[in-house]
Length: 156
Image 1 (cartoon, rainbow, N blue to C red):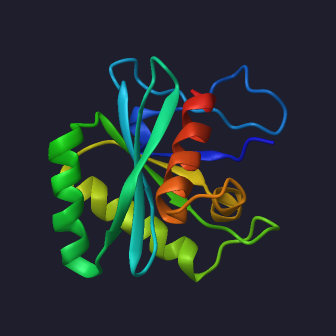
Image 2 (image 1 turned 45 degrees about the horizontal axis):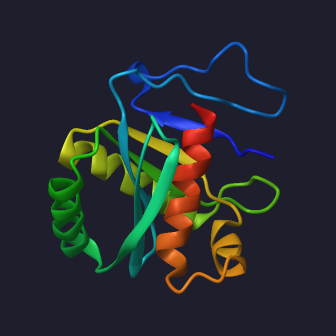
């Protein structure tokens, strides 16, 4: 069951009318082709890259940094990969309720948008780390970011 996406900023995206029941696909401007996804964590942030044409994603590693140091390292990845937009995983409780890390991840998404002036899309990331571990990932954070991006690409 695909999990809902939440686009950021609002003017960029709107829900599609032909969404299947339980889905909340997002209209993503056609000029947005490459994406960098981030699985936000307080100490580690996994990242993955992918593109719209192939609808595939690849885990790329984990940024082990906090605060402003994290953004310096993210800036290097943005420079290297040149994404058209960013995708951020936002955690929720199993019942869909928000919690403290939900607020942190959303703040992180807003900070990314403000610092890098790229469109940012939020993706419900429930169970991505569990799935990454189930796939036998050596780097669960990077694989979780990959799963988040794969989910996003399937929805557009």
